[in-house]
Image (tube, rainbow, N blue to C red):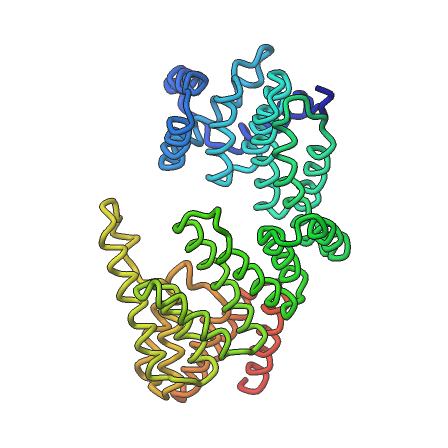
Length: 414
């Protein structure tokens, strides 16, 4: 097979960086860690491999030491890892957001897959590395790797089977880079030969949404839902899952388009199937609160979201005390719907609790807290909350628009 080579020399350079960044194991641990790393080569079977990856993810501190020891082994002249060992290490590193280690071991996987001339393993390792780049927002690198895979020759037919998925990933990486015309051209070419394929329609919808063409995206998602409902090849649970995902995306798109009736229609359809889902209850409640609709019912939905979320936490056997806390986003929704009903004194402590959580360090929540403080006549506290909101603002257009509105409030109240 004439494959695109990914050399080991750059790989080992990355691994050296990984070792420098990770916490070094004590001298007495090194031998055991090396044995543990090498034992990964002997695991066989899809379920045992997945189980081992999960076990490593569940022990982040121990796994980071293991990655350090494994990197040292991989720098040896005759590196000892086979495909399975490298794949387990790469997958665990990716899920623990150990980026250098993930990239390095995925590249080692690619090298091993090339030696084995396994199209299946090549597709698996390329996809893993591309997904890492995508998650790390390294879209140019992801695009380059997609194109390399699509150029590979195919001897056993297995690479060809992976190219359809790779083309989808390429299209998404182009969209993420703002290359809308190129991405949509590729999708439209696919639709010429697969016009009734809801998977391709879903891909087009995702691209349109990514490039900000929300109205067209909503139309494409509606067509996708129709295709999913008609697809007799799907099992019932698969169909239900795809319909749920599509409806949830559509509900949010219609909110962006300020078509609240249509958003409500999809939220209600979701709740008809999963009436106790915390997210669905919260989101519909917040949308109504934001748009001053059905405020009493909105408050009930949000309180239900909090109650159901608490039940789900309590059901976890391994729940840690520090993890037993209310969702900051749900608390923000409750604080905001109370504010909209002029229940300012009730709203303030709820929002204060939200911003005390790490997940509540969000400009929108601080903005809401500022509005509540101002309504209570506490201008100094309002200004402090808005200043914090400005300091934690993100970089997206939506974030910057909110930041500008908050800065206007600060100017008016200082």
